[in-house]
Image (tube, rainbow, N blue to C red; front, side):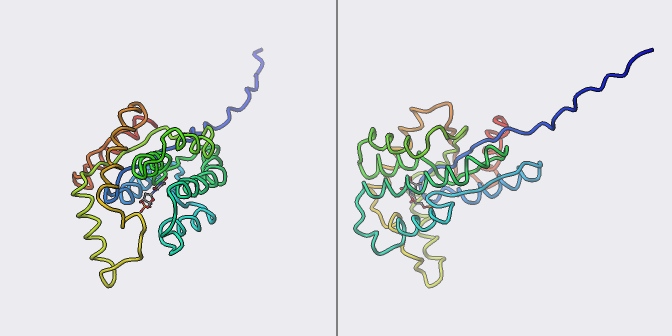
Length: 228
Ligand code: TMP
């Protein structure tokens, strides 16, 4: 007589958490692409957490206001700007990103530490080693698995920013300290992203964001599906 062996029940397979960030200068269509990606992942049954930087937590959103819109921000030094960006980031990583990754979710973040290198390092001219040190302290081991760099030339970025301003109620939106920066600043940010991309070929994938929304979405999906 054969004895029946009871096998230990196999625990359900839980997908690994995965951390994807979107980067680029203004006007690259990050918000639209993040929304489309999140919807597609959710249709496939993945739990997705969408967050943005600076911000993404109640504390981070207050810091975001100070950084972008508060009148007190007008006299902000580059050093204070770097630290506030990374205070928001440190909170977001611990309060939101790490728990979501531990639950096996896909975390999609609108900007992350590459923005600090590009904007505060290259754009504002802070020493890159100091910027990296602050970032390391803020994020610890929490690093993106994939970064999609949505690329538009400076002229396209400027034109998209202008049309966004013109289409806001009354022709003028809420003042944004970053969008008021001069051309030289955005040129340095653009050069910064180029340098970061060259130094980080495995993680960063550049996508031509002058293409149609559908084509950009297809390129984004191509990179993400390979990762998942
Ligand atoms: P956005 O959400 O409209 O992209 O605005 C965020 C602004 O903050 C944008 O101009 C880029 C800037 N920024 C930095 O300068 N450093 C950073 O680390 C991050 C996350 C954003």
